[in-house]
Amino acid sequence: MTPNDQPRLEPARAAGLGLPGFEVWDSLASTNDRARTLAELGTERGWLVVALEQTAGRGRRGAAWTSMAGEGVWMSLVLDEQDAIPQLPILIGVACAEALENAAGVHVRVKWPNDLLIDEKKVGGILVERGHGWVVAGVGINVGGAPSHSALEGESPVIRPTALSEHTKERLTILPLAGELARAVLTFLDAAERVPEIFEAFEARDALRGRGVRTEEHGPGIARGLDEDGMLLLELDDGSVRSVRSGSVRLMPQTGWEE
Ligand code: BTN
Image (cartoon, rainbow, N blue to C red; front, top):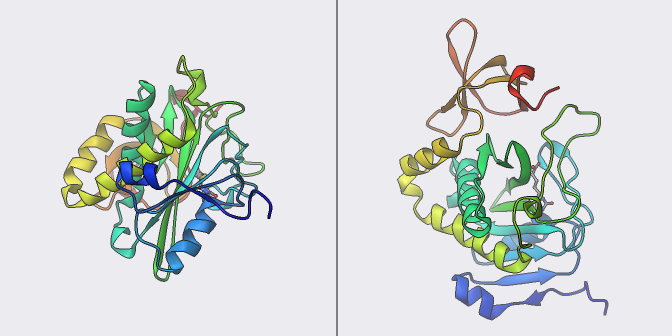
């Protein structure tokens, strides 16, 4: 048997966090794939999958997510269909931003829908995937080393990546941080009837609000927060306001990121 054939189970860590299970793999293709398999097998909601390395990590919109061994938190949580509220990406973004801020002592903002930023650079990203009967939330946080990001091939310019180690004196340890992120997501989800509070928390961390952006869906405009489903509100030149549901959102050249 090779070391990667089976995960290491961490029952004490899981119990301490109130999670049904905490499994750690030396290497996986993608923690989201493993969490999906577990979800399809009926594994309890809140089961956490962590891989020290991913060989085929995925970002949003089909991008690759580089996931070097020991350089980041590469994790996925098994959720269930009741968690798949429209505001789920926002909720996870805010929960992870709070958990990171508590762990690292640095201000973390959220760029809609769920990039995590420190000083305008991307420290992490979130990939929610769902299908018939399964929902998983994948989180990737650059802790050290060469930071990962999920730019599509040929897509430029992009937000620059960063890693937590560029902003903290001591390097954070991966498994405790993964546990805190998972616990924060589940705590926010269990309070999901308090969606207005989640929106308030997002507002305080919104990296785009009031700034000129270019969206794939509706073109340029000013970011004006969120609609009730957690979609980005965009004020167009003619004063009308549209909801952005998908696609890329970039800051306009004069406001940063694009060069
Ligand atoms: C993005 O910013 O495009 C989302 C990146 C999500 C990466 C994480 S790492 C753990 C989980 N497994 C994956 O294959 N992707 C997510």
